Image (cartoon, rainbow over the protein chains, first blue to last red):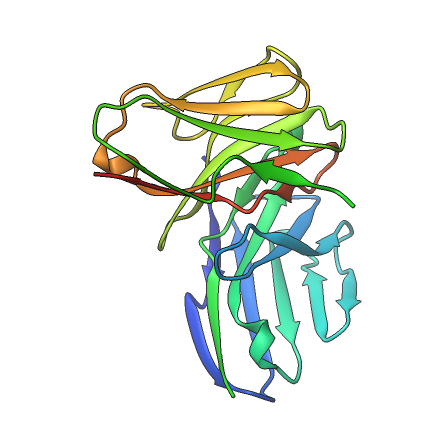
Amino acid sequence: GQQLNQSPQSMFIQEGEDVSMNCTSSSIFNTWLWYKQDPGEGPVLLIALYKAGELTSNGRLTAQFGITRKDSFLNISASIPSDVGIYFCAVAGSNYKLTFGKGTLLTVNP
Amino acid sequence: DVKVTQSSRYLVKRTGEKVFLECVQDMDHENMFWYRQDPGLGLRLIYFSYDVKMKEKGDIPEGYSVSREKKERFSLILESASTNQTSMYLCASSDREWQYFGPGTRLTVT
């Protein structure tokens, strides 16, 4: 099946630092999604991207849909302890099926 | 507020037991999904369903079956649980590109 390459696998940062993670694919997709999973919970949608080149913000989070439609990145500014969790990128394929990246585990040191 | 609920947060079963994981959504969504989540492997799709009594295999269906008798309910069945099915199981529903997830069931097979 389709694979997404998400990096980095994990990050350990100090509170207040900015964070950047990205996701790449060998195929073109028209919808990119970013989810966050808090410890012990299910993933929650953060941002949905539908247009190549689109830059979308949600509070301290900013995500971009790459112009080639083969990549996306997520930035978190001024991190806080509650940003801890696993961040997943995902792409939408046929029949509303999603393919997920393997996730980026973020740890924030207060 | 949208809601996907799963019958148990934690479950411990013995090898060879038949295991039922239940998922209920209150959003009248057509599509429902079952994933398993393992460290370093991300979310992998087991089965999904477009409608009542409809089901499709995902990427890793071996050892699992599903049932969708009512629109709001999607059950995952482990006919004979094995230790390699110890995992976090996540249910999701959708009516468009993004999916809403339940809180997950952490299943341990001993």
